[in-house]
Length: 283
Length: 321
Image 1 (cartoon, helix red, strand yellow):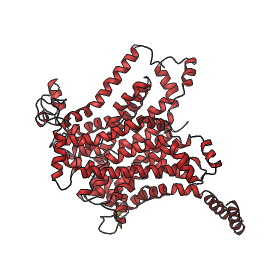
Image 2: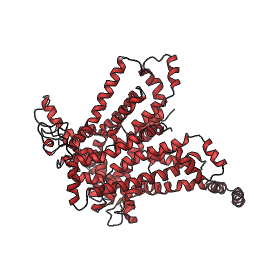
Image 3: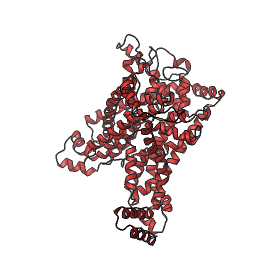
Image 4: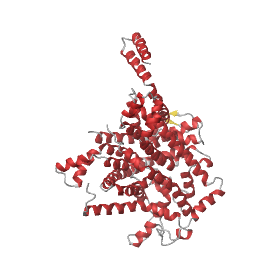
């Protein structure tokens, strides 16, 4: 609107956004810089923000030091990949399956189910961790990948976004498939799934971030060292709050943990914004 | 298929034609049968949803009235847990205070900041938007665990801590301040870190909503005498993105009441003098360290109703057209 016109207002706008943006990025830049600092720079006084002689030694240490311990660091990465992959793929499929009839079919209990989903967006699933733990342990799933995947498959926010996105897609496309005699199952895979692509990307982004970053499933549902996930491993290297040990190695591990989430966001961002346009709630 | 339904309806209908309930059930059965394909699609989600969300809510409420330590069967003890919680448990009352203090600031500030930044970003041309979106959104997708190393170093309590060093250089402090150990600074530090991470899903919803406000609304506004950007914001933009604002508010309430990760990573569990203790850290402490599941369930139920109640209120305020 106003954006192409030169004005002092625009100059201030850009200056403000850029300064605040850089301030927001600063902790991340600091993390990157620490991950590449050699040991003598990490404990330098006065403290430096940027790295002067970047080195890969911290990453080397991370893989070397941990490969001599009982469980190599790569095992934690593998565990996190399996669990996150399971949650993302499984969640996308069951949510897309459910979103299709909820958005496009006339169902007697459809509105009730949808209201239940909206209601469950209003509280954090963290308040349900005790019964979830009891269920998992009673069923005998402790120390399995299933224990870390199953409780997180039914994600209310992702499900809500998927249904809302599907609602605004014109019915005519689906009607055409029906006239051609396609079964509902076929319609779903051939027509609905491709149309849902932006919503799927959005679902994948949010469930990837949650699953990848959350240390608690592995803390609560596993007792064996070889089943622990990446966030727990990073926590262990750090030694917990108040301990500053192996800062370089820890920074390297932390950086390795953050990079995938940023990459996933960059890949999906365009489709995410397309989906979020339909995120509106009404009473 | 259709004749099936008709026969079922007519059979059931003829048997109980006079009772309303019978007719209702017959209709219900017919509907379910006709829509059975739809329910098959929903089934996998619904089973997991019921198992891991609906049942846990009910079980939590039940357990909160019992004494349960996992080894023995739950023993019904009435409202004792709640009495203990609100009358005798000073740490819990402190945790509620800390959580509310925290939520009252991060909730509204994070929310308004998300909206304002999204609005400012929507004022600049498309090609520059991505960079700024990335700047503001990325912090929210980093994990508290991974960022712990940065905050530990930034807020470190000796003169090697970046913040202490800087504040001593410019003469604000004479000696290093123990940001992560001092009872007075623990909550503010947690608030700052959480605000840094608060431009999350709500921010994206605002951004997307603002991009899709119909252009002709602005043209119509200009004819009606809207001159300045702030007038546009108040009279045109905000009403147009109200559904997104409601969605963002719901997300923000949940975000600001579930403070846990950041506190545990920065100041530990338990934190010095319980200064960083929140409702969720109290819950975790009783559930998975002390294994007092009944008592911990009571804490969970309190937090559950706080979140649900606050969101219901917000729905009533913002949800009206």
